[in-house]
Length: 97
Image (cartoon, rainbow, N blue to C red):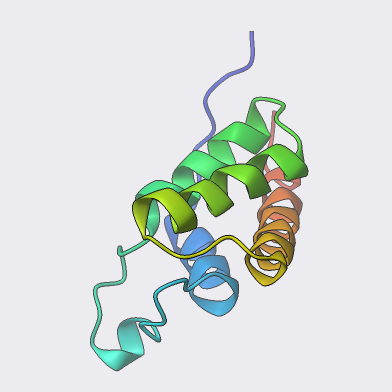
């Protein structure tokens, strides 16, 4: 059985704010709460931890942007989501199992 990891939220936030800021807030330095995207980033990291592919995580992020946030699906959203998923996957791969 795979144990539940302890994700370092600051690391996920660094990824999220640098690479995935779909509503263009600019981050905590712009006065927005640091936790704005936490639930999405934690879910993405968990999916990767439990064996989902980067493509599946990208699909999840696209769904968040299109269904939850109301953006139109396009190749830029998909390409960016895949880039974010790959970055989160790199982080998840460093965690002890």
